[in-house]
Length: 82
Image (tube, rainbow, N blue to C red):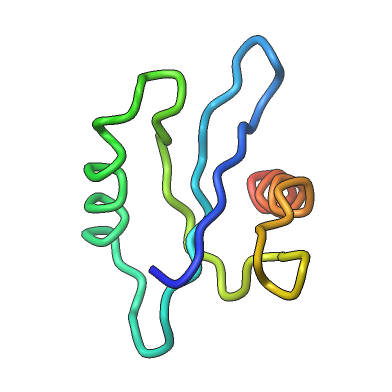
């Protein structure tokens, strides 16, 4: 994993935590890798635990790449999921 960002998707009463993942160059996304990411997050409290990992070519960032722009990530994931 090169960079990741976590957002809540859905309405405030029924949000699901989703992690957007940008992989290092040369690493191929796979279902197994997504499962490993979610397994690693299993130790988090339930309300912070992502239910889905989505691979993204380039995560939106601010501050020269130092921080994931969560609002843009949320918009992108919402648009992709219809």
